[in-house]
Length: 169
Image (tube, rainbow, N blue to C red; front, side, top):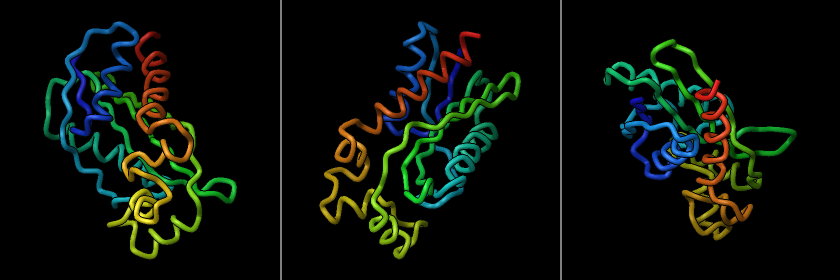
């Protein structure tokens, strides 16, 4: 099976590799740059839109893939709080079927979301604001400082669950 990941980000590529290895499915996996068409900090359904945009971009440029996996993190307003979630989309290039899942949530304090919004979500992430303010130690993985669990663990859990559902049915 040939799988394209819509990012060259090592965290995302490794998460996809681990998810498929966990079910013993041999695959050739390649990470590609792909345009999300959304700002630096996707909000609400922009995250799903960004993941889908990356799939569309990759489909136009790369032939012969069996699956395309796209991961786009975003912040979502839920129950009066701002939470970060990763959107995971697995696209079956042979059938056109799409499988969507969301990672568990991590609450981001409102004050940092508002500061990032004031700067502009098109160019600033909440993670960067939190790191600058000393609230988290790594803007690429604020999850680790906030919850004790890394962003990669959240993504791997979600991908692992979804890959088992998609590939073992």
